[in-house]
Figure (cartoon, rainbow, N blue to C red):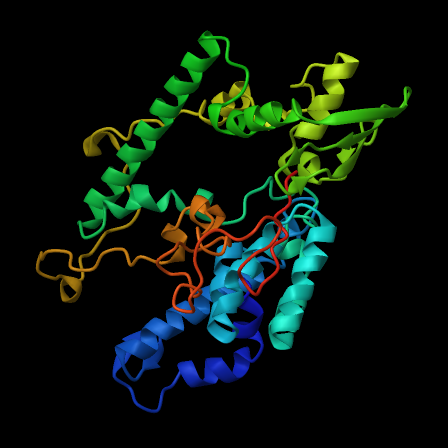
Length: 383
């Protein structure tokens, strides 16, 4: 997503290089290509150009749509041109909820590599950071949610066109039925919100038990919340403003549900802790998404007569063969939990003991309390 500008910066020069008619070999839609590789490259460049033009349509502008980068793709581009040892810190910079933590980690990147810092800062912060996002992402960092649909289509590859259409339509219909049935069962059991967002909600509820607070204003419900001390972490102070639906930790506006600090205050005021959980997390909203109905196609002799004649191009026929290509594993197949997992040697995220660079340098064991054995400062606060 962040490569669109780079691809289209010199689009005229690139287009001249792609649409080469000097060596005619392959003909496609009136354009001549010297070889298959040029044709593939042309298709990719045309797709990028169409995406770039589509983003400037009025209905794709803010208020109707908000453009954000996939942080995992941005991280992959960051690793290609800059210090690979900083890619974990770059991920933590993008996922920080608070601006103060964001500034501290970007300062560490700047001390390690000035070019890497300026490369990150040339991108607008609301495009790739959580703290400046304004809650538009709803905490989603990658495009896995939208790309999960590819798993439905992957099983239909390598079949004739009619079989691919039928299989895709069948799996889509089954998905609607299964999701609607599951949501209906939850509603019959009296469940108000979907299970996955409730996992985060319950984690905040357990954490709120250890916080302390001080109320400053009765009318506007302004509180100061202090987190518990856990080993060498904690003892942080956050301001909760119920009138503005704001907590200084940033999680309330990012995830659209009450954070642990807000829950602690609501326990005192008597408000329901689910009062500020967004309705988009509810079972009712999920049920409405899958309430649509797909109509059966029926037998072909019941279809309306077509006004054109379909002619088969025999030159495009090919022999049926086993599909050799499969999905290539990349960073999109790595779960978010891997990036949050800490190494047992240096206590940094993104790798384990076997891949830790300190093992070969004689490092080992757990770092002393309050210290990190890595040369990159650890600002993972207990909130």
